[in-house]
Length: 69
Image (cartoon, rainbow, N blue to C red; front, top):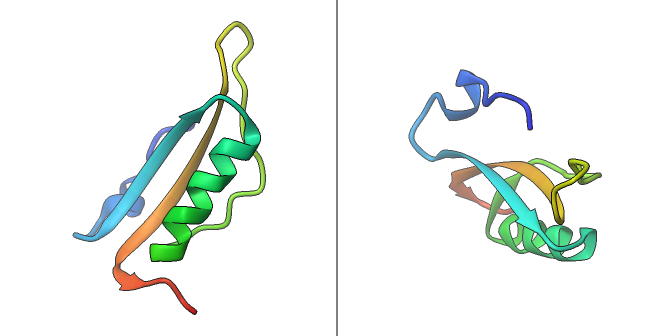
């Protein structure tokens, strides 16, 4: 995964979440659950490191504001 940029956590309430999951469906389901609670970046794809199990996804949350309805 890329290095976390300082701007992503520059204020209280900003969070970077790295998720490791068995498959794409599980990773996206978890990301959608987070997005239902807080404002979140959209995630369109997972990454897979050859030789390592599962997939990974990163999302950025703003816990200061609830998710838009």
